[in-house]
Length: 269
Image 1 (cartoon, rainbow, N blue to C red):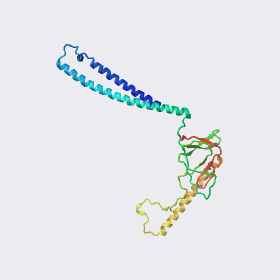
Image 2 (image 1 turned 135 degrees about the horizontal axis):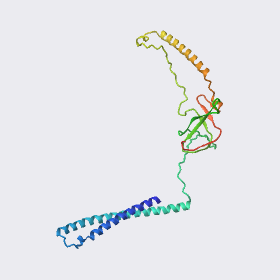
Image 3 (image 1 turned 60 degrees about the horizontal axis):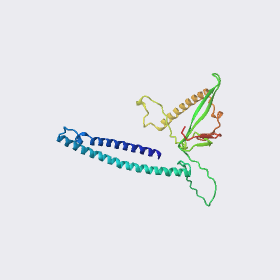
Image 4 (image 1 turned 180 degrees about the vertical axis):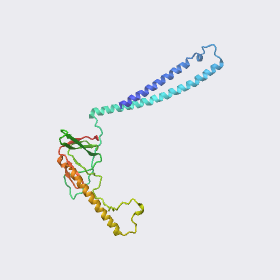
C-alpha cells in the first residue's frame, strides 16, 4: 500500500509538470508583441493569421489543461482512498499484533467405516512423487599396495512441500510406479545361421527335423555359455554388499533401514 501511494505521487508530479509547461506556453502567446499590437509593421493579413493561430492554440491548451484537471482530481481521490486504507491497516496491526503470513496447509481426508463410535489412532502411509535418492560411492585406499575400501552412500532429496525434521529413513531400490507382476517370457526358437539365402530350410520340412536341429543348437549354446561362465567366476570374486552395510533383501528389491534421524529440507537438493 505504501509503495502504491508513492507511485501515485509520481503520477501527480507528472501532471503538475505538464500543466506548468502548458501555462508557460499560454502566457507566451498572450504576451507576444504581435498579439498586443505593439509592432508598427503589422499588416492586416498578418494580424488575422496571428489571431487565428492564437485562438486555435489557446483552445488546444485549455482543453489539455481541463483534461489534466480531471486526471488530477481522479488521482487525488485514489490517493486519498489508499491513505485511508493504510491507516486502517496500521490500526489493525497495532491492535492485533503482527500479521500472520498466509501459508499453505496440507491435509488428508480419511473415510472410516465402523460399527460403533470408537477412539483410536490411525497410521497413514502415502506416496509422494517429489522425493527420492541416488547412490554414490567412496573409494579409499591407504596405499598403492593396500586393499581398497568401498563405501556405499545415498544422496537423498525431497521437494514435497514440507520440511522433514528428524525423520527415520528407509531407502529401497524398488520403483513404486513399477508393477511386481512377473512378465510372460515367450519361447525363443534358435536355429543355425546360414549366410546363403537360397539354402534356408524349406517351409514344408517336417517339424521333427526343425525341433531336432533346435535341440542340438540349444545344447551347444548352453555348453558354451556354461564353460564361459565358469571361467569368469574363477577370475572375479565379488564381495557381497552386506560386508559394508546392513541390508534387508526382499524378493524383488533391497531396503536399507537407517537408524539415525535425519533432517532434509524441502529444497530438492
